[in-house]
Length: 188
Image (cartoon, rainbow, N blue to C red; front, side, top):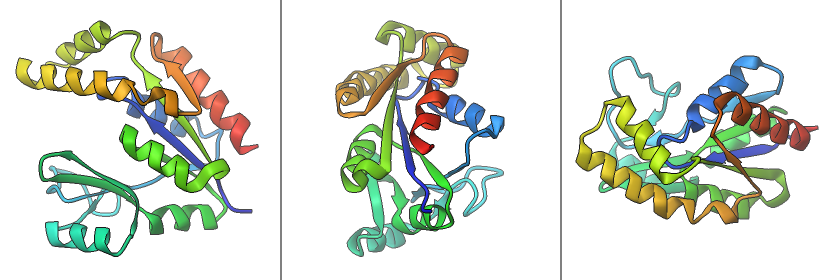
């Protein structure tokens, strides 16, 4: 039996990756992480095919022209991220469920493409103010970058209505449990 597709999206700083990693670590749900493609250079310790499929600018453009992506997005000027159709097919055809950690517009597009074979979950911050506080608490970005991310988050939250479900990450343990339940119900 072919696997199903779980789409999880959220604005930056909402805990999406933490939630996905916690569910994967529990090991109760047969799902594999889809490795995304990007045209950025690998960071220290990152490996091709493990963290991302690292493509050159030309390779990424060629893949776009060959319709090789389920979704792709220019997330920042000149910086592309996308999900390869071959990666989704490889996991699903092996009978496993695939989890896609993707940008909000990409999530909407993937849901349209796969329909009932996919479930889309949007992770919401408790509020925009709390999201700003979390980003500031990371102490990894300048005030200007935080302002940019918060502005982008406000825009992205507008897509939540296009998702099958929304989970508010006010309490991390609760958000993990709610997300896991939504996935378990879908893949049964």
